[in-house]
Structures are given as structure tokens and as C-alpha cells.
Length: 429
Image (cartoon, rainbow, N blue to C red; front, side, top):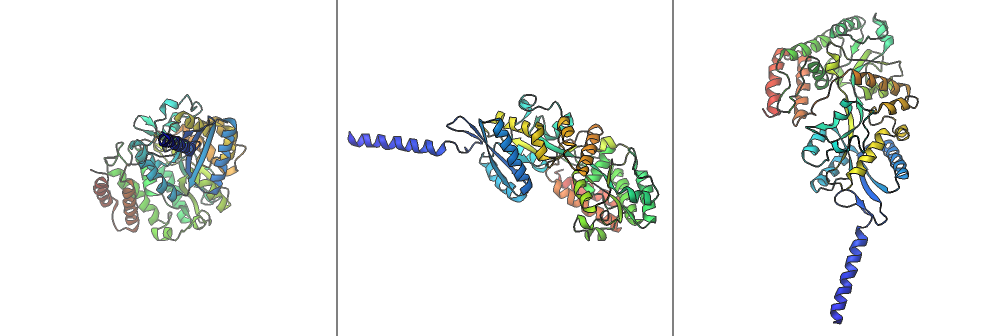
């Protein structure tokens, strides 16, 4: 009997030890509950030290207002982040709240690693001050798998002093066209000045296609999203003419631009640059010039433009506390005091109320970005499906084709056929 009693006692001790080890820590299925009744959430993101610092302060603000919730931070650099996230996903041990990039969202959502946030919209997550396109930035098929932390839009970032120097008004008007672009480029070339410094092929060819009722990829990702190769010929033929007349740098010149400090706009040798809105602040800071933002040329500007999510916050499918995680996402996106710490670092906020409150808090350049993105919200179309698998290879191919056209090694007509044949093979057709 004594031996049996000893066995029972040791059994009880082991149970107590296991309970003590599991209490208050992170569980293998996302968050956990602790002995004091708190909900513990794990939250992961990538970023630099300033982002880590302000995110920690936002978490602290939330915990002060929600004393029953504890949030454990897990952050890393870009490369380390994804290397860590992949095995966590395979083991169904993702953090409750996961920062997601547009290039990975579909992969994780379709792998059933992320929760559909649709049931939490209008409940834990207030989207009443956000546009439908903004919210749908995280849409995959019929579900919302990521809440947009902020958006960007392409435009022309230019120096009004140089625009005036080549013989035009200091402001590029809304509604300017590709014909206007070419006319301005002629005047710039005649003055020995670049008009623009390059149009990244995949970004701006896609814009051109969208403005003509097509897009680069089919909605289901199975192939190209345009049938008429004349669109390719027209666009890249125009780009080749720009290089030939000297209003856009040759590929040789572009290879010598190793950083923003070397850009012709910064050096006063170029009128402007076509790029995403989040790149404007850095350009203006380095250039130390009175830069402005203009919409893209048309016609079809509103069809061509879309709001690109800077990144997302998602809730993992394995989380045991999805409602609590969704409530934190709401705080991050809608709380004004929290966003005075964030200051648009993860993209221009979607809440009109937050944007209005931040206008007096941000720099002049950031305020210009806010204003342009607000305009784009009213003058754009839905982004559509995210880039499909194989898009990386297609982008590299398009870069190569564009460079060969600019060098005169291949005609736009020849490139159009070759690109279609190779790209559709890469996309699975």
C-alpha cells in the first residue's frame, strides 16, 4: 500500500509541475490564457528599430486600456522574419497577430494558415471610416485575410522649378495625358534635361494596361490578363522613343544610379520620377527641393490607379483568441493617439478620421502624400487579385525585354510575341 501511495504522490507532483510550466506562457496554437484570467496574444512583425520602438509603445497603450490582455512581441528583420514564420506555419504555431506582405498573403491564406476576418468587420473591427477598396485590399476569393495597415498609390513626383524651366506651368494639371507627357519630354530633352528617370516595367505597364481595360495578370493567375499585344507594342514603343530622344536615361545610365542620392531629380538633372507615394518623403528629404505630386497620365487614370496595401495585419487560423486579436487590429488602425505614434509608417491610414487628426502631426512631405492618397481613393479602381505564383519570373522577363527594346536589340513587336510565349509558360499555361 505504501508503494502505491508513493506512486500516486509522484503522479500528483508531475501534474502540478506540468501545469506550472504551461501557465501564463505562449501555447502552440497562438495565444493562451493565464492563471489570473488574462488573455495572452503573440504578435509578430518585421521592421527596423524605430518601427519596433513605436509598435511596443502602441502595444503598451492597448494593454493599459485592456488590462485583461497581454501581448508578447516577436519581431525580426525582413529575411529572418519569413524564415521563422514558415516553420511556425507548418507546425500550426503562428502568432495570433501576424504582419503580412502582399506577396505572401495569398500563399498563407490559401494554405489555411490565416483566419477570414469578415465576421469581425463591423463588430470588433470598425471599418465605417474606410473605403470599400481599402478594406478589400486584403481580399482573397470571398474572404478578407489581412487588414490593410496603410496604402500607397503611384504618381509623378516632380520639381516645379525645372518644369517651369522647360517652358511649362509650375503645376502638372490633373487630367494630363501620355501625349502631354511626350510633349513635355521633348522640351526637357531640348534643354538637356531628363523629363523622367524611368518607368519600372511591371508597375507602369500594368497601370497602362489597367487604364485600357486590361491588366498584367489574369484574375485567376493562370496567364496574362490582356489579349491584344498592340497594347504592349504601344507602351514599350513609347518608352523606347523616350530613351532615343534623351528624355529618359539609357539602361547604361540607370545602372550607375546606386541610390537615391544619384537620382537625376536629386541632382537637378531630371524633372521628375514615376514611383509609389511612400517613396516621396525620402526623395524630398534628400533632394531638398520643392517637390510636388501629380497623378498618372491618362486617359483612363482612374481605371489604371489602385491603392496598393503597404502591408497587412492578419490573424492566424490557429489562434484561440481571434476576437481579442481582431480588437487589437481595430485599435491599431482606428485609435488616434496610437496613430500619432505610428505616423503613417506602415502606409497612409485608411480611416478618414485618423488621417484628419494626423495632418497637423506629420511633416510637410508626409502631408502631401496623405493629400495625394486621399485624391487617389476617389479616383482609382479595385486592385484585384494579388500577383500569382510565377510573377517574380515574369517581372524579371519584362525587365529584360524592356532593356533590350531600349538598346534597340529587339523591336516592340518582336518583344510582345516573345514575352507572351514565355510569360504564359511561367504562369502555367
